[in-house]
Image 1: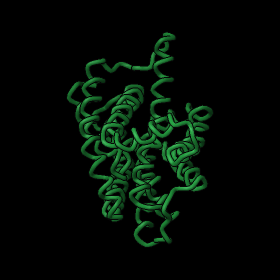
Image 2 (image 1 turned 120 degrees about the vertical axis):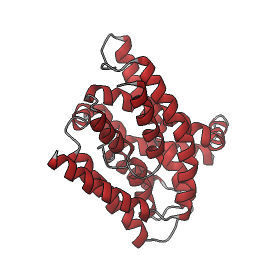
Image 3 (image 1 turned 30 degrees about the vertical axis):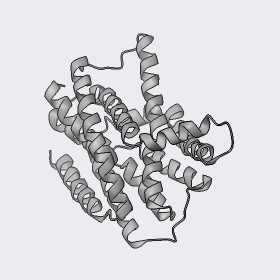
Length: 266
């Protein structure tokens, strides 16, 4: 992977991590077009996802600091309950990461036809939010946090948008739009940092996790993803508040069909 390719893919990741169009799916498509090996794609995916975590912290720092300050009061307040809901949402993805990590990694090397199919699934989920509008709740409860967490765990499949799946699930459950966008972006921080920590531990133990990608390309992709992520995060929060995701559904549908055709005809 060249530095130019890393920057392009970093920008793609930063923009699509928050937009409901599947960042991993776009990275897989971009990597295929650039002819990048699966091993390089995997470690690069982890790095640019960490970059978008930092984007989330910057854009939502007011909310993050509110949670941290509340936790240090050492009482059962709203901040503690919010944190507990985030922990509940992490249970499904933690199970997938601990017991099915090898299976997930194998999907990344299974070809882009899987990406195409999952983009169609993403389009379907986003379309449902336009036609199914249950009565809206003021807060995200423990049950809904777990169900949203389940949708995040399923969205590890490339092509199935994490933000699109979690936001669509939350909207279909009747959760408040603004609160849901914030929760969706914050709940992904611990799993991504956990994945990066596992790779760091492997690296210190002498296990090769970087493939053939150069450190310079990794850094370039990281910076590009961070800057693009800051822009996209602010944009997506405003989009979710308006609740109109049908255009992203159309985009995912068209791209999904194009990806399947490309995979079959190539």
